[in-house]
Image (cartoon, rainbow, N blue to C red; front, side, top):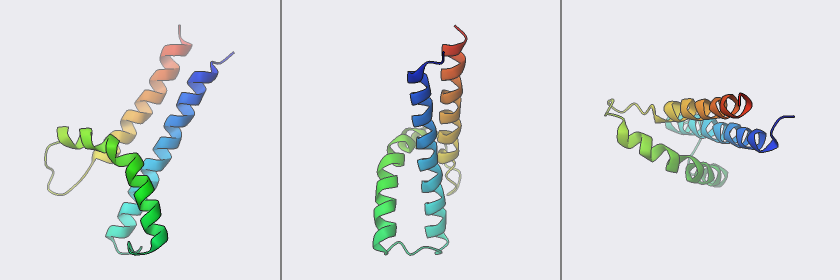
Amino acid sequence: MLNPFIDLLSNLIHLYKLCVLAWMILITLISFKILNSGQPVVQKVMYALSRLVEPALHPIQKILPDLGGIDISPIILWLLLDFLAQALYKYFYNI
């Protein structure tokens, strides 16, 4: 039988990855002025997603060199979360 705690952790990681994806899409839509950041709904969603995602991005942004205005820290966070989810299954199911 599969370990339900590992499945729960993996599902939480995937849910967090969806938050990161939604944050990246929202930031892109605001920067291209497709969404108005002054709208109350956009502000609330952006506030919630920023509170969830940005604490994980700051340590990555400190390590990365300056790339001239290009922020690849969400991509690195996405890859790290994917690695963590795969490592959970690999480590705990191959014992």
